[in-house]
Image 1 (tube, rainbow, N blue to C red):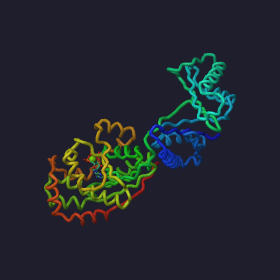
Image 2: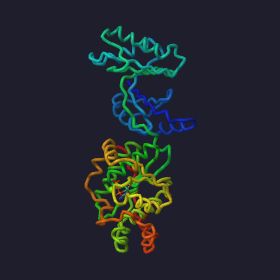
Image 3: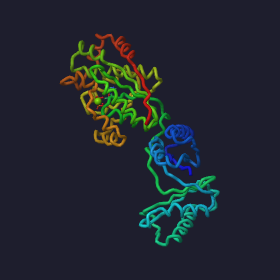
Image 4: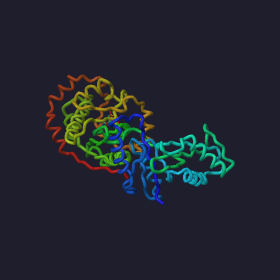
Length: 388
Ligand code: ATP
Ligand code: MG
């Protein structure tokens, strides 16, 4: 027998035309999430039904419950729009429930108002039927030990007992395309995840200083992208070498300004890549006050290097909140692997915390910025990281 999985999505924020777009994008993303198992997705009364082989129902539920826009997912049984058929199926489903679970509740949602019984009536009829079959059952609306849900659609009725929560948010791709600056630390993968949650398609950009940084630190960013790709199906990962830039900065600029100057170069490179890839915003894992380059003054000076919109989804989060999300999305253990990052190389003993834009620009005037950017862009390597 084929398994049927019902996918519910958040409806609260959906208005008018947005709804159609939301559903279309969600449909495509659901398809991509289970493509190995199912090609059959249909839409019924504000839900999707995914049909696939029963032996894959668990893995399909897991994959569907990680698609942004999904509110919850349930394995359902389907029956005809007939109260007798619903009774029979309700009895069959609840037979499997442990004999200790006697407090129950029935919840009906009647999307199809042509069905002759209103929801409270259906609850009553099915409840009475179950109690007839098992006199130990008691109705408990407040603290049931199991809940039987019934949905009356336009051509079928659906029954289920359990639900898995989805991640909520908006389907990836619906709000635009962005470039995540992905370092390999704890913060930027979380920033990427939060952007995807608001419907942004994310491409990632990692700066490395090979051979000063190892191949393993690059592999770490591939591993992080693979974790993120669970939520967006795939992530194009771009790598750019900033070795030459760092050498040049080291030779020509004061040590304590190194990080700010490097960051400004990174933003410029991110902007060039965004234009090339038609990406509309840069996303970073910057937060306020975490490190020297994240004072308001520093962020301001760094930000001035680009005319692009820079999103900083972590701004209002404490480190603990960020770590909690990293643990939930399973990037934390990878992020704390001790491979060096290009920013930690040549790290000044005491970086400035209140840089002056004019001073920074004066040093930049001594450099051949255009040539440095061009050379760095020529080191660009791109791979498409797919979800497992
Ligand atoms: P993270 O935990 O993401 O590394 P962080 O707390 O270490 O962040 P910074 O080192 O100040 O903070 O970096 C701020 C942001 O700059 C990062 O979150 C990331 O978006 C970007 N960034 C830093 N280093 C790199 C890099 N090597 N490649 C790409 N982006 C980087
Ligand atoms: Mg870092």
